[in-house]
Length: 435
Image (tube, rainbow, N blue to C red):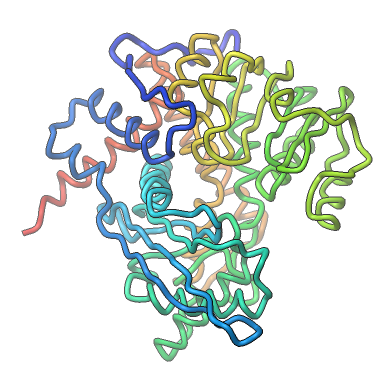
C-alpha cells in the first residue's frame, strides 16, 4: 500500500534463497519460512532442530461400514507439533488429497498462529483421506466415530482439542465430542471446539475467520488514515471463509467486485450482491449458473486492479508464474499457504503488502480458544462479547506485528514468523529439556 509505514521490501539480512518449485509442497514452504525466521533470530542449531520437527504423529488405518454393508479402509492422521506453550489445538480435515505432510505443515502453522496472538496452545492438525461428498450422513458419522476412537489416546481438553476445517462441520465436532464423552462416561464439551451451541459451542465461532480477515484489512488501511469505505475487493475462494469475509467487508463499506470458487469466477465493476450469491451457493453448492456479474478466469480475478485481494481458497495459488500479475496493493491470506516463497519476493519487490496467513486467518482459532475457556468454566458469552474480544486480540496482534515489521524493516510475514518462533523458543528455554 503506497504510503504505509510497513516497508514491503525485505532487508538484506532477511534475503533468502527459496525453493523455486512453483507448486512447492506446503510443508517445504512452512519449513523454509520457519528456518529463515530462526536464523534471523540467531537461534542455535539445537533449538532450530526442535522447532522444525513435530513432537508426535499418529497414522491410523480403519474400516468404515458403508450403507450397503460393505467396508472401506480409510487412512487418518493426527499430528502434534508442539506442546511447549500448552495443549495442542488444531483443525480436522476430511479431504481426499489429505496426507501426513499436509498435517505436519498445518500443525506447525497452528503453533505459530497461537503463539503470535498469545494463545496458551501448541499446534496440531488431523484428517482423514476421503471425499466426504461421497458419503451418506450415516457413513460420515461411522467414519468420524471410528476415527475418533482410533486417535482418542491423543485427545482431550488438556491434551489436544480438534476444531473444524475443510470437509468437517459442527456436526462432525459433535460426534467427536460425544464419542470421547462415551469413552469417559461423562460429557467433555471442552474436548473439541466449533461444535453446535446446543452442546457448548460458542457464539461467533462460525463467522470468526471471516471477521478476522475484515479486522486486519481495516487495521492495515488505518495505518494510512484510510477506511474500508469504497475499497474494491476481490475474493478468491467463496467457501465459508470467503463468504463471511466478503460479508463483513461489504458491511464495512467495501465493494466486492469479484469472487470465485472451484466452478467459476464472477466480476461486476459496480459490485456483486454478496447476500444473493451466498443464498445461491447455499441452494446450488457452487457459484456456477449464478445470474450475477460477468464470468472470468481465476487468473483474471487475481490480476484485477482492486484495492484488496483476499486469498481464501487453498494453498499455492500465488506463485512465481502469476505473482507479477497481481495489482492489488494489499493481499490478505485467508487460506493457509496461498502464497509460495518465490512469490513473496516478487510481491515485495512490487511494493505489495501481504498480511500472512498466521495473522490474517487466525480468527477462528481465537474463538475456538474462547469456546474452550467457556466450556471449562461453564459460563458463556454473548455474540457481541465474543466479537469484541476477537477484535481486541486481533488488533493487538496486528499492531505488534506491524510495529515489529516497521522497526526491523521487514515484511509482515517475516515479522509474524519471528515473533511467533521467538515466543515458542523462549518458552522452550524457560521450561528446559526433560529430563
